[in-house]
Amino acid sequence: MTRVLSVTSEIFPLVKTGGLADVTGALPAALAPLDVDTVTLIPGYPEVLQALDRGEILQHFDDLFGGPATVVAGSAAGLELLVLDAPHLYNRDGSPYFGPDGRLWPDNDLRFAALGAAAAALAVGLGFDVVHAHDWQAALAVVYLHVHAGRRPGTVLTIHNLAFQGHFPGSLFPRLGLPPGLFSRDGLEYWGDVSYLKGGLLFADRLTTVSPTYAREITHQDAGAGLDGVLRWRSGVLSGILNGIDDTVWNPSEDPHIASPFSAQRLMRRIANKVALKEQLGLAPDPTALLIGIISRMTEQKGLDLLLAQIGARAVGGMQFAILGSGEPWMQEGFLAAVRQHPGRVACVLGYNEPLAHLIQAGSDAILMPSRFEPCGLTQLCALRYGAIPIVGRVGGLADTVVDANEAALSAGVATGIQFAPVTDGALTEALNRAAALWQDKATWTRMQRNALKQDVSWRRSAQKYAELYRALEAERA
Image (cartoon, rainbow, N blue to C red; front, top):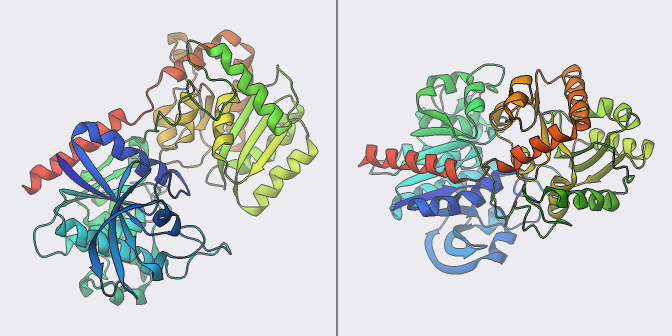
């Protein structure tokens, strides 16, 4: 049995701001049948402590970056947890990263340095075989273990989104308790700042990211977010392992959030979800309209500015749109304006609503993801699972998971969606035109839906790759 300490700043269903939580919440269960025992270290946010079925206190810190702290073992929502209970760092209202005013917590540097330091202490003290750190918030766990003088576990750092790197003023470095020599070009120094992610990238035994294409993309300057040189240097230990989704949570044949459960064998039952979605969102009951769903952060990274520029013309042309998300205020207002200008054709709900997300997947004809970059993407995996045709930019994990409906794929009967590149207004226009044409060919559209529903988007294959990675590390350090 391989014992893994997973270190993360969020985990579904306890605390979630994005796909990171979905991954860290689902992967432990997928690894369990492979003789991998995963325990997750998570900060003691109020919602985590409230949900925790507490066990014993495993570690006490007299002063962990400004105050006392304990590590409590326990479980919640079927997850085995170690919770870092440090009230001076985590006992506050707001998200893991932002306060109620929408501003970043000013002490995020210390909050996530504490997570890394605690992880290193626990990993050594409790004899874990591997520490798996997720994103910059956990990256210092790798660095603290790198400088540990005695025997230590192997380390893996997964990059979920290279755009977020954990940069803080260089004046912070002495507080981290790391050797002074690590504040250098060959260490955590980044243009005078401290970069938590850079430290993790330099010193982890293995680096992974969440799709093979993204692993290649980030070694190039245009997608490397300033760290492409480090990633090229460490490319020998970098691999891409696709994310999966929890196919018990996302299961159209047993989903309690949708109006009509369905499957590839009972595809006609899917139509009732489209009717229910339109009724809930106030869209016109036009059975001929191609209904496109969007479940996304409203940012330029996600390419929704491109959709906003042409949504009016598309609505007039007969398409309908069901939009769920939040983000840049100007973009939110733009979509709300489209709702006012095109009632019955465009609907937009700001924020995130889990039941509505399920219904959009089950009721939309297609799901649009015009991302400029996308490490993996989970929304398109859910779309495949629910027979909603993904329309995606040909980047990152979107390129790896969607089979474009080109002539060869259509002839072979294997197409599952539509890809387009580059991610520009003109390419999006062409992709939506292709979707509209395919929608008119009901036999082809239905075949694509059935292909999509047959795809294995679970964690099974990827969990096997993680298990192999862990065991290789164990063998190296034996």
